[in-house]
View 1 (spheres, helix red, strand yellow):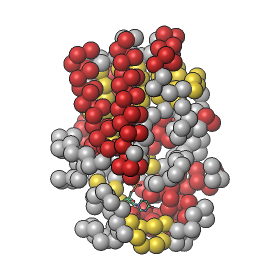
View 2 (view 1 turned 90 degrees about the vertical axis):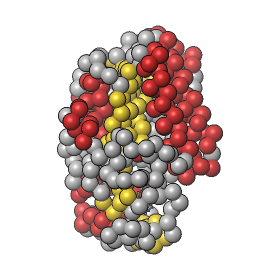
View 3 (view 1 turned 180 degrees about the vertical axis):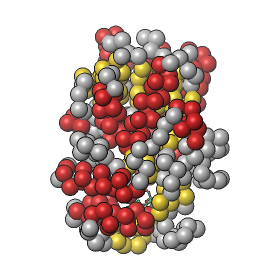
View 4 (view 1 turned 90 degrees about the horizontal axis):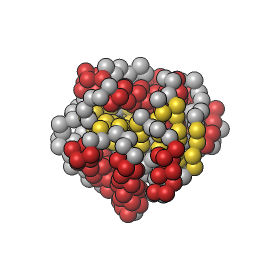
Length: 325
Ligand code: UDP
């Protein structure tokens, strides 16, 4: 079974490549290394390139018989998407359609898509289930929702089956320490907190203590990246079994506040972790927690690393091992 992993050199993609290889799949990674690292790919074939490049894509599809395509190659910064929407619509939407059109042309009919909780916008209720209204409030979220809608149309018209996985807060690192999070710039809470713990960063800024939550800081649903990869594996099996297209919310169902993350990181690392209070970051809802019952019921997914301390401990091992790369 040969799988094309687009964006397999990135944070989540590299964990997926490892899971696929462990499962006996043959992996071809296509990545332009704009946000990923060649040394994060632990096996298979690597092709340097961009999904905007139709002639490269057609050569790749002509030379491999893919059972499915997994797509992790997106821009992910909400703030940047507001300032540079064209970048997001171009890459996350237009280039993704380019990839889908190539799949249709070569009759590759199974697609697994990295979607996001940002498609829901300001939550009307929590935990957020799949039926929650989709009202994305920034170009990043809109770009992902557009692709989800296109996928429904591609299924009806071309029989392209897809699974959309709407990540809440991906975090942690490979429990064996082989790979981890290396965004540049880093904007995510857990790696930033750990950089403050290791001394790579002076302090962690807490964006708002006046939210309507028990300690006033925002609550998020942190899901271990290895559990995320496992969900993709199950989604792949689901599509390979000839089942229908679907979309699942993916979090571990527990909310933790920014302050709880900092406290847990102090506990796990034994470091003081200096903090500074800041204004709210614009566009941050107070509470985002997934209702993941659907993927548990339908695909049998079970998070193995739902414990926040484990998520932080694995990220800390990576932070202290990677030495600042
Ligand atoms: N956050 C923070 N300081 C930081 C980075 C993030 O207080 O330096 C907060 C942020 O406001 C949000 C939570 O941590 O409430 C998670 O943010 P992150 O960027 O990791 O993920 P998001 O939920 O925005 O996708």
